[in-house]
Length: 78
Image 1 (cartoon, one colour):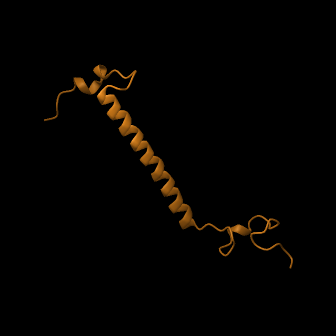
Image 2 (cartoon, rainbow, N blue to C red):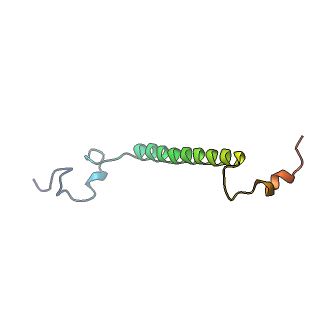
Image 3 (cartoon, one colour):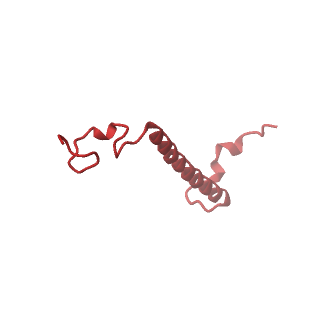
């Protein structure tokens, strides 16, 4: 044997890029994982924004003066 087995502590770098290597991660796995992580953070941001918007509309947000909102001075669309 001229080299350490795949996945061992003494294996050289770059071996994990081979398809049959122990630590190989396919591009499809990278794509799926990145979309899951991005979707998770977007969903958390959506919940955060929804909570802040509901709290501000109910008057629980301190420091946000709803009387000075520019949208309140606009005419209705219909």
